[in-house]
Amino acid sequence: MNCFLKLIIGSMIYSSIILSTDQITKDKNSFKMKLNQDPHNQAYAFDLAQTFQELKKYNKAIKLYIKSRSIEGEKGWYSEYMIGKCYEYKGDWDTALNYVNSNSKCNFLHFN
Image (cartoon, rainbow, N blue to C red; front, side, top):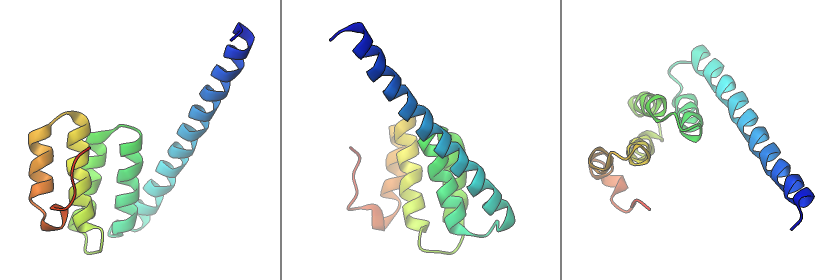
């Protein structure tokens, strides 16, 4: 493959990464605003946690998953599981497994 073609492909890949990072940042800002307006909305807390997880900001994601878990709603058990996944991504396997094993609905789930 010639140098020119490598340069074109490389810049296409770089552009797609930048665009997806820009979209994630926009999502983060939108979810932050929504959560500030309605701090007891479980979906907003969960969605913002997922956004931070995509940005590899696991500590912030964990705090928001904990908030999501504490709010009444359908995403409580899944928030618990996602807390475990964040600890897995951080390399803290013991804490990750404790979160997954502490929730009976997570028993069918496993780490990759």
